[in-house]
Length: 106
Image (tube, rainbow, N blue to C red; front, side, top):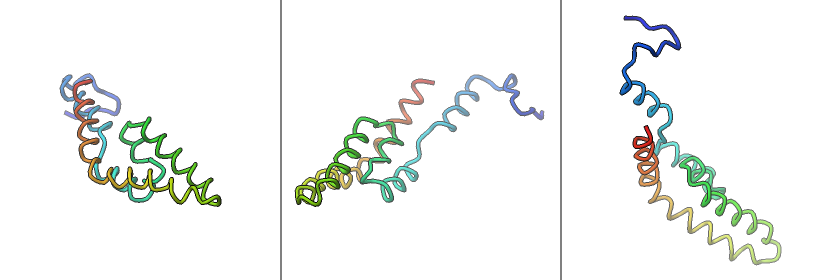
């Protein structure tokens, strides 16, 4: 049976939930790409719905960049740098946790 665009009347509730899940789940691969290119800005944490810690990394990086000329930034840049390095190992668990929470909400 061919369904037209926008016609969800023929879909079972389980099928509808699965479609919503597929549209909203987070990808570990995308998170790693964001980590690799924009990790020091915390963008991977924003993507994985860890907004508070994403803001913390972003602020630490920006404050460190501003303080670089005074020499203090050379020391403080290690804090977000170490945090982002640890995230290399935490990303799969964060993505899994988000996706499991999404399943329970559906």
